[in-house]
Amino acid sequence: MIRSVLPEDAPRIAEIYNHYIEQTAITFEEQPVSFDEVARRIAEITQGLPWVVYTDHGTVSGYCYASPWRSRSAYRFSVESSIYVAPSFGGRGVGTALYEHLLDDLKARGLHAVMGGITLPNEVSVRLHEKLGFRKVGQFQEVGFKAGRWRDVGYWERLL
Image (cartoon, rainbow, N blue to C red):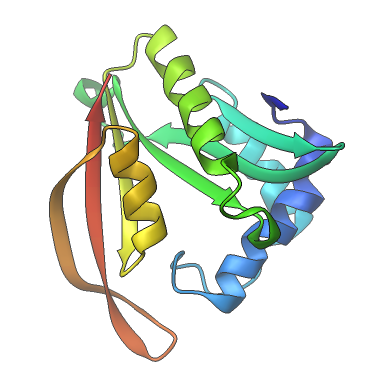
């Protein structure tokens, strides 16, 4: 089931996200986030943009949200998307279902462009974005340093 995020989802979302912080270079955050910090981020994002979760038997198994792309007013119809799926739920279609739901919601809100930033290499995320109609529009080289090495970030875009 896909539904809007609730404040009480913060501990499970932190658990999922902290796995990626601690075990991967997918996110450039380097320190685990607290439940309170996740709750603060949820409250901030949901002031005007969607944040949805996928639940399996009542447990959050993934989440997806949109945040403002840039702060200048001309960018108001563009957002950046983020998606994380619990490792034990990978390959089950959770990411696709979440992303399709998010894209439909964004289109209904009158948004125009969605950007996805992907730390490279990350074949799973690249495949997901391209399957959903995103196209690669650029790549920054060595813009992040995590886990002892420089990391590239590619950007994929989809117009709604």
